[in-house]
Image (cartoon, rainbow, N blue to C red; front, side, top):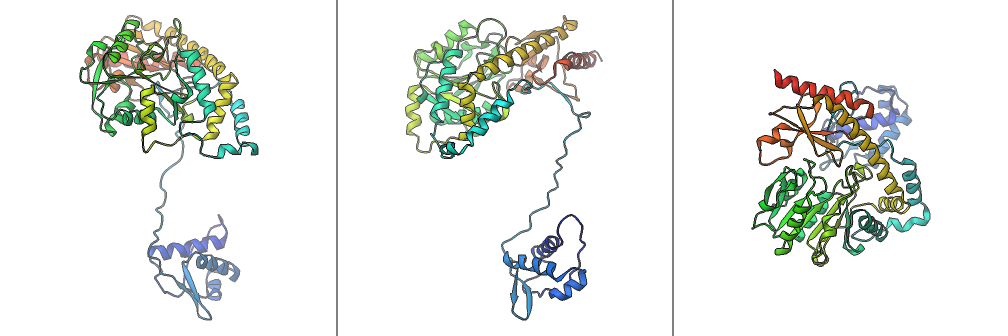
Length: 452
């Protein structure tokens, strides 16, 4: 006789069904074993015969048991099914009191984001008359979105391109992987320290690369290797040092690409947020020989989880792209493309950037004010753009265990000693009223640790 312990959480027939199913899958009930009659099991478990009948019927419908007329129910042969393992993961969020203070470079804060507009665009996207959005769409992304990106890049960054040169993807990683397929025989050069995702892609795709030194003017162009023919750079705000590629270096880099069949990959990941001087023109806009591949994302200008990036390819590489036999399909849902298009078309995209730039500029001013008491013990660099700056100490430092923060050395392949002196202070995700106290606590811990 089958004996089970029932609870009040769910219907009794559902519990009985699950108990017997588990016994069959685990082997406790074997093939052709006869189950108790509905009347006997009803009496034994003190359940109604209707409850037993519903559970048996569900088991029979799903093929776990079979019936013989006027004989009863029997266990079916279950050879291909396995019981799913019990989920033992805990989904409880960490308590705010125990959460670490974070100065991570990727942190951001979106109190001023126009949520109401995205709700409006989302509602529009799912109206019946928008049923065309349910189709796959263009492999490079919707024409309307590529038009808005082209217009924005031309007016804000000086990028010269047509809609046909723009490819939309779900991430910088995906689009950079596409570039490695177009330049499959290339030897790459990457900034060191630099964006770890680029190294990750190159390692995964088994592409050779050479780390190139960075200083306070950006990538050291004279150090570029003569055997390499592609270089990845972040000229507007070098990741992670914050250096801006000087005008002299920009000219040198473009000349390097023109001299031979070489390409520059310009990663313009946070160019919207510049606080000092006039906005810098993109390298792509200075290039008259189509040697620059331009790449950027909406992660900073809208929000990180939007997962939309874009690529601008020179004409020669567009020809290669069109000849690819297995081009990747568009990975961004068309409803999201529609929402971004409307956001840009209405002018709210640029207004949102302006609001966000003011918010981060205010935060930066608070950061710089909070650092004044430590003048002489630290120097500050990379603060002219983005959402982080770099603090340099006179000697090697170590990170406090109870604070999330990175050193420049965390992003460097060639472990130069100076990178162990430099701390990356990301302030994007910290509330304004907490910035001073958070910075004071951080620096006191580092300085006291050095002194001891």
